[in-house]
View 1 (cartoon, helix red, strand yellow):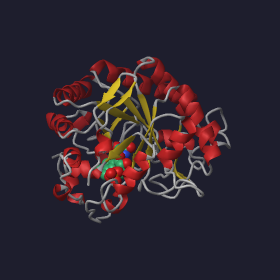
View 2 (cartoon, helix red, strand yellow):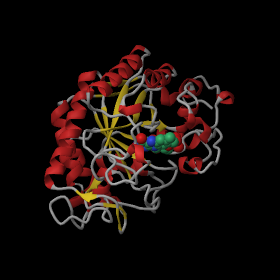
View 3 (cartoon, rainbow, N blue to C red):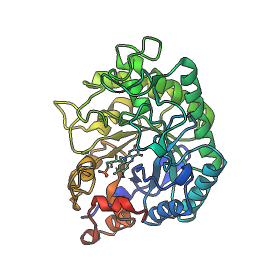
View 4 (cartoon, rainbow, N blue to C red):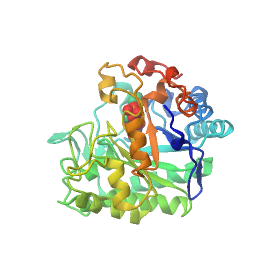
Length: 366
Ligand SMILES: Cc1cc2nc3c(=O)[nH]c(=O)nc-3n(C[C@H](O)[C@H](O)[C@H](O)COP(=O)(O)O)c2cc1C
């Protein structure tokens, strides 16, 4: 297995990557009280050492009373957490890596456990955690404005700390995606509406504020998905034309890169073409895109959570699409979680040494 084309540099604004491999954001819950520990810094630094081009951190939450349901998930605000993140980026840089934090607000979610209960109710566009199911409160216009400020503030902190870019988590049924999705966004004000374009207003306002906070030259990546944890088969955009009405205002607001989350990268997004989600996002916006979803592994990550082990698999189909120019970067989750040296092994053609993934790997931060 040779994949030399993935080892070409990538440049965008101030971002300079030595190759096209991205570590996908993966929540690890090893940051007690919201502060990344020295072990967290070493975990990321090992992936930098292992030749990952761009590391995207686990989701790290912005400053809202109920942005998280887990006290072991890192915060991206407050003196101690930010000192923890400073140690992370310094170590990653010392090992030749490049990194973006993934900024996150969970929106309305189920409580994880009583220890993780926030001091305020979970909040979202209309209080829905899933179609027809209330799990929190509807945000007021004041809550929305404060949330947008919190994302902008966190992005500014990321830049000040020395991170190389920011990623905004707009996927998987969390807050920003709850605004995109009609079943969870039943608002009748300017943040709701019958069309996906209307429901994109919150994300567009948020990106605009982030852009203003980081300046024109600092890369902003937005992670999006059609699927949601609440409904794997959900589709926000059912046609390319609808997808364009969704993404165009986000480009206008300042998105530089779309990180297009799929569970299986080889699945076509719409009938009549084999382009995947990242392929369509690139075609419709002209912006660079990241693809993801079971790259280098036999099974997808939700199956893995149910205990199905994944074994290493060929990159041929990925490379076929990459060579065609469908996307610019490829994000790898579990394969990099299980094996810090995955990227280097791919670069050196050491495919016999690649490891599979089983959910036991989640128990430690190795
Ligand atoms: C343990 C774990 C935690 C994850 N946490 C996040 C997260 O915080 N933010 C996010 O956008 N995606 C998260 N994901 C999804 C991954 O970023 C990725 O999209 C998914 O695992 C598919 O890639 P893979 O098949 O290479 O693992 C997580 C996945 C795993 C396995």
